[in-house]
Image 1 (cartoon, rainbow, N blue to C red):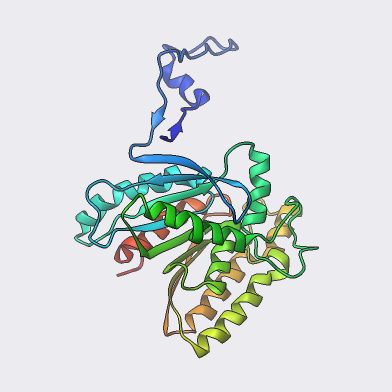
Image 2 (cartoon, helix red, strand yellow; image 1 turned 90 degrees about the vertical axis):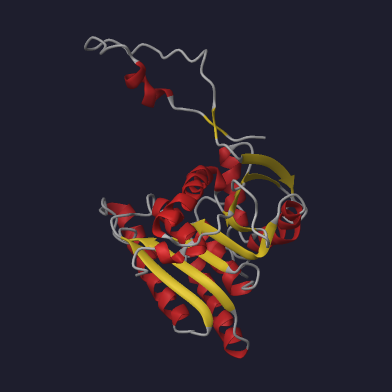
Length: 320
């Protein structure tokens, strides 16, 4: 099945109207009887019933044009695919032309967007469970909305043990070159995967990770990861991004500003990047603070930076 994106009538009314309406008159409706849905070429979707999570997942897949490399296509697994997949798909389609313009090599990845079918409220609850680590105590995580949490391991089992083999049976994939990319709770899941399953992916892209969750429980996992890595070094590439305004948003007065300061999004991410960089060895760490972005806009540059970090790192800002 192809993925359809429908144009918003409210955004098109002005451009489709034959002339300005009289002052105070209601805008004429836009006739859509002869319109067709906008389709993302080369993009498909299917639903997958997971034995690991016990729920149905919707999977979006974008396949690059042309023949696959001899080893297969690299893969980016994108969390919150319902929101972010179309943007990353378009960025990926533009990657070959960008790389040619700068004379660099870039292997265009398959993009696998992970989301849920059905009711948005139900899907938010599923996300709250699937993207949070299985901490021993989940009684006071700081999440006021998710009724059930701590299902990250079940979700990763679904991704690696169920979904990836199913995709590899249909597509030429290079499963040695895979990335996990996520923002916010998605970034938290990326960190959990890095600290508990560092060989599951070779690249980890965490945008605005919710390190604050459950009294920064994920940093407990980091300590165990650092201890294990000191004994048996691991190899991984890690990109951490955060919006420069996430700790002090534009409208920072009142409860919103107090919560942002308490969660320390910028400080937490910067400090984690420094600690991981000090590991040395086979762990490559890049930290990017996205100037002028807050939590609700930082996902967009994260997608672009994450794609370049995975596929063409010499094109990242500051790579010179």
